[in-house]
Length: 394
Image (cartoon, rainbow, N blue to C red; front, side):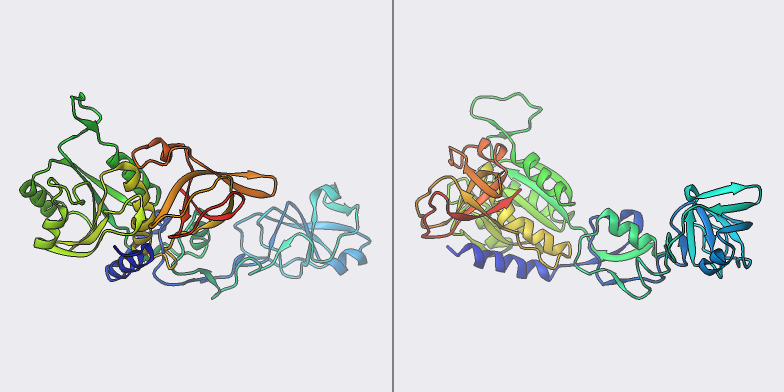
């Protein structure tokens, strides 16, 4: 067995050589990762504009006129810049371009309109209520850093620069395949000895949550020829294949032998609990994660190994999981493998505390459903009550 750290390093290294790029329209850019840094092409705002409805004035002219001025023009958003006549005010609306010679906008509620003249009832502050050119973004400034997943705000910012297409990391297409004679789809009646396949819906949900396109290849029975042919057909359609079951050492577990014959095994068996029989390799030129058939083990190994690999494939510069500290409300004896316990993190005053789900058996799927974090326990380390531990939200 190899350590979790060594296994994850091997996964990231193998996946890093498979990144690809594509150009997408700005409307499809959310949650995508730019290949390069993105820079502003124009100032934002592009010109000085009014922050509210009111009157644009020259501050000194207004004082010379004792704050009583004729209205000489009307400016709405979208109009070209004009020149303000001396000793006059311009009616201006939010977003309107501040005229040449004007340096202050007085809100309309502070002015009294009498015919074609205004009286400014409160002495304004020089330069007030004007959004200055470039105050948000200056031309040539970096607006989005490469390796950053774009959110809606970033998409809006890029759009404001007139950028309609960006070069991004290609979003991987991932296939899911479950193995086992005992597995049936949830729409089928359950017979003696059978169980419903929970792995594909669970893993599909995890993949969709990080923006991955999923292809469900269903269930294949424990037959080595059928399994090999199914894998051979499946990898033609995807960038990564994830299987569950058939990767251990039982008489009906054929994944290792197929990988040895038609691909390569990069590692098999990791010092992790649950999930020791995870296998990672290549088959017919496609990366493959052969996860344990046990749903809890499949869930844990997906979060620990598969998710970081896919995040790297999607272009994230820091694909590794982000663990934070929380105070334990439980104790746990040391184990010979790195252990990932299921628990529930909650805020108590200024503290973040984490409770242990009472049944940590790998056969208890409710330990995943009723928890919100994995608790990492490294090899040989005890966990004591009130100790700071590493947790991973999911």
